[in-house]
Length: 143
Image (cartoon, rainbow, N blue to C red):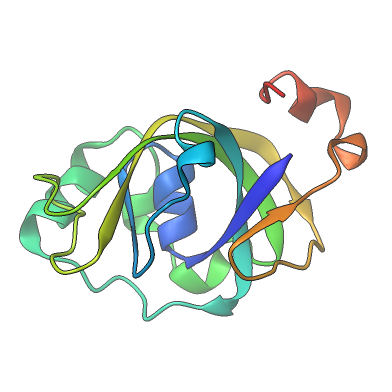
């Protein structure tokens, strides 16, 4: 199954269903539109919780516990969930969309109960062997 590596805290925001856009400098290949992909939280850290007020409100009103989590305690080097890439556009109206790049529209996020740890990511889309998923994780993944 295809996976994509994303820095924390953005990977967790996506897997929790809070962040509905992934911003990239490159257009998502058409063959991945409509497909479920695994979310890999990369080992490298993002810049942290630098967000605008609308984004902060979305986190605060969401039922997850992410609002009070230390970014350094989020899992890294792990498959943490999956999401469907439903579209790829520019200038999406979401509060998570950045101007001047491609906005990958995400839906139907699934957060795994337990991350699959010690997974090394790669650039772009990469193949993760579903065989290595635990039975509990498989029920959350459609291949």
